[in-house]
Image (cartoon, rainbow, N blue to C red):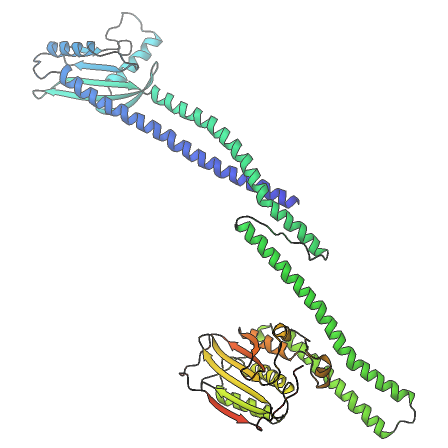
Length: 502
């Protein structure tokens, strides 16, 4: 569980980090944006103020420096009161310097050795008076940062005056400081709330994971019964929980099938071994056994050994059916392939064998494995029909692919048994299957082979009232067009009557 606690901590810290980065980026954008907008507004006001100062403080009709200076004094004196200390400076050629803040630009100085403070004021005044045309930013001792707009005014081709208008940037810095303080407080509260919410979300997210870990521990101990059964919206955690439950369902089914399979194998092997042991015990107890007794025991032993060999071969085939090397597909003509297959089976049983093939295309798959599957289906049909009974092999092509079906006119398979007959060792009549040499694996092998091809197997009823088992190989449509079904008949005609299906 320590890993899950670490997961909660990592989720919480990750969310907090993302939030801090988001708040920081927002603060930076607003902080810089606030300063930029306020500076732009100040520049706009300074530009307008310089234009007004130029028009009224240096009038076009003023012919002498004295007249220019008088107009400048009137303009400066007429300025309204402002919350900020706006600076106005006019340098009139031949008439000195005019300003509304003489403490920043002293126009006269007492005789004597200047003090250090006076020297600093002089340097500050020279910086103001020597500012270049246009916008500039100066750092003043008393006002701090000052935004300055300077313009040279010409009248009649000569420099009449140089006007400067300055605005302190302290309000801009104050506004940015307010933004920083507000963001610091709001960010701290938001971060605290986000940490709490992130921890709760992380804990809620990790809760089903903790349950999965607990269930996995129980599964590791051998208990496959617990499930998560998560309710609520189908989010990623719900999908994971459902997949986990589905995995446990499959594991439980697989273990149950494995246990049943081992029990069935043990039972199937016990029968021939019991027969062999019994026959050997008979021989051991009868010292006067004859050649006929020996031959009889030999026949029985050979039959039971052959049964065990077939059982082992079938089990090995099923065990290897999910391996990549299980299939070796190669194209073979379909119709000759089916005709040869059906003819081989027809030579071993007295049945009315029929072939209906609607295409002359190619077989899409491994011909050897598919022949094994079809022989199992044909053998099953032969086992459940009497002499002369109908056994029909049909090949059809549809959008789903090629379908190979075997049907008969026997008693059929009950609907509730149609899925079960495809399971390993399932028999509708156990005693008769053993007597005919069956292992109960024929249909299971057919299903494994067709599923290895990516196909499906279906068990149903035939038109003649018997069973119909169809193998469908998908997405392998032959190249030729469909033809009308052509029927080929092998063996004897069908007499009335057939033994019941086991």
